[in-house]
Length: 135
Length: 94
Image (cartoon, rainbow over all chains, first blue to last red; front, side, top):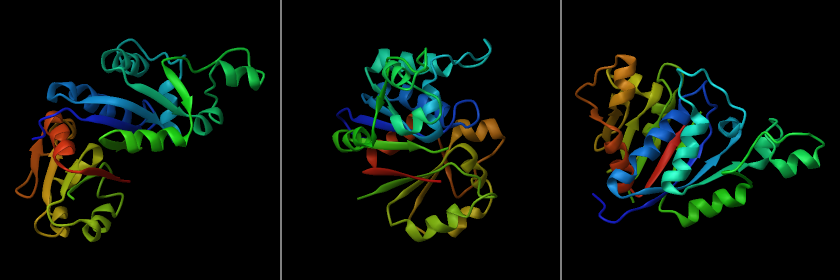
């Protein structure tokens, strides 16, 4: 058993509500503090970027994944990093990208941030563990 | 350096376990999660060499009605976290 707390980076590649990756990653991240660890960054890649869709409106009796990510951000102060190349082609645009491409509304909002693969590399290098939640 | 290998695909739709058999080292751990737990109850894990610790995530087994066998041990989410902390790195196969 490791005594001091570790910082974790997670990569989520699974689409919400069609694959289990988001649920697995959230359950894993939520279990970290009990052992003194913390999730420092979550990187959403490929279809995983749909986890950041700001208009996500699941039925009330189903888990609200966007709210779960926001709660994780609140409780563990983790970065929620979205791959810009994966996101823009799937219609997920923050305010700057929406304006740049002539759309009236953003579809991705804080605490999610548009980033590039450089930030994935940074997260992998700076944190103690990188765990990939595959599609 | 010990590695935790994460398998989330069913053994009936991929050959990942056979590929993994060539990629694991002594003292590595293999954790079956999601549909990967379908490998936990049968003899499919015999493909892996001796000296590898085999685990299956309990909640994914329960939700699929999979019972563990002699070859793999059950671990809960806290155990999953502990495995990632005690090994040096985690590799996901998919």
